Image (cartoon, rainbow, N blue to C red; front, side, top):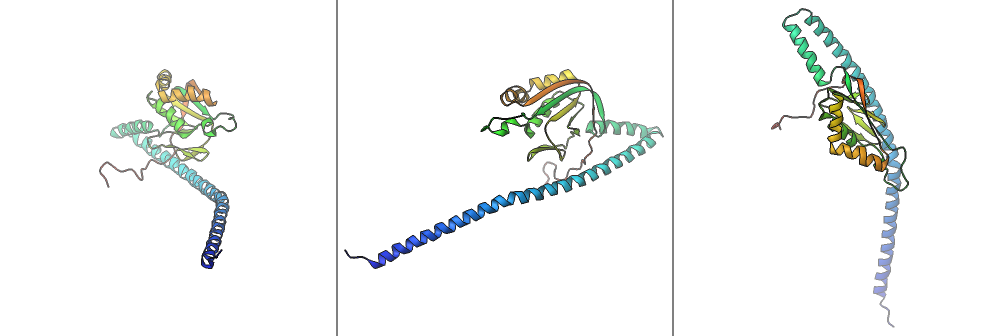
Length: 246
């Protein structure tokens, strides 16, 4: 049999080429995997350090805001003492601040507790057994239908600029991290608030179907007296634009 030396060399070159390509791909793959395994811990620690620094700065800003608001209230009381139009202005200012969530508010209402399941079966999806940000929004949206005077979650007063969003294993409310159990206080007519929860389809699914299926805690209690804290954050909108504004 006649052997074609040129073809054999070509085959040998092809085999060697595939071997080197496979070795290169394998080396690249394991290098990337090693990089990926090392990166999250580093980035996680960096992000945690940044979050801690920002939270310290936020507490300083909160204290400054409270101090400035106290001074404004002092000036308003002094001005109101002169009577006339200034007294009227002061009363309107107080009413507006109460409506905006910038003052304490007390009265009867509801206490709603939401908490993760204490355990979950092996091989089950753990996300089904924890309270998420959208569960809190579901409860708050249902309560808003009952016309409450104010709502707070874990001592974070909700105002028009508030947000409730997921942040890893915790939930952010007003840029403050909170964790399970989540307690929502709503001041208002207890019966009306309770009916608004019962009539809301999404909250009914959460409190009955999901709670029973996955062991979530959803507890609603009437309270004779609740005091909600004033909102302590800033109210300035940085990114919102009026309609038609480019």
